[in-house]
Image (cartoon, rainbow, N blue to C red):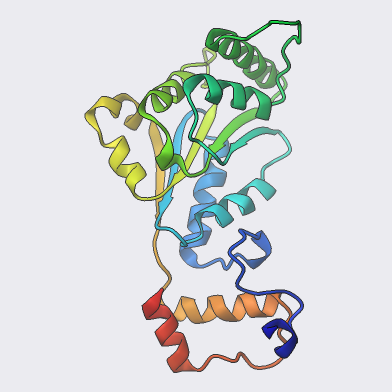
Length: 232
């Protein structure tokens, strides 16, 4: 209803992570730069954390749109998986095929071996391979350990799989557990996405309204923007 009243083409404040609506504050630009940096770093983990609603997933979608052509990308958005399900999903995302003989059920070793072969072939072709996991705070401890083991896949020159973990602040707490110390030592870059300032909030509102088609003056007063900032 209000889209018609304000003569907008689209709803400007949908919660869908549409990269068109991404307002690139300085922090968002730095977060995106960290992810793009992680593509070519050659192994290990890159972390992006932030509270709910700070724009992590939208930055991730923007990142996926800017992935270089020489990269293979596997993207997992629902990480509540067992180790076996994780390995199966990674292989599916990388489009690694298995035989379909009746009764054939790949084991974890089959998946890891197939993934290693895929990564070696991709490396020989000059391609990088990146695994992106959203909502990574939901990863179980044994799954995190399996991810660490996947970063052991390597040649004499470099690691074969770059892993990017995106999650809420509790992901940092999880990785600070002494039992995951070996994984924490492999974190090569980490950026925490904080909330917008009041000035950035005003720019954010104007940006989304403009993308949605607003051609008149923004309908929010300075006082309203201040209240929006305080409540969010």
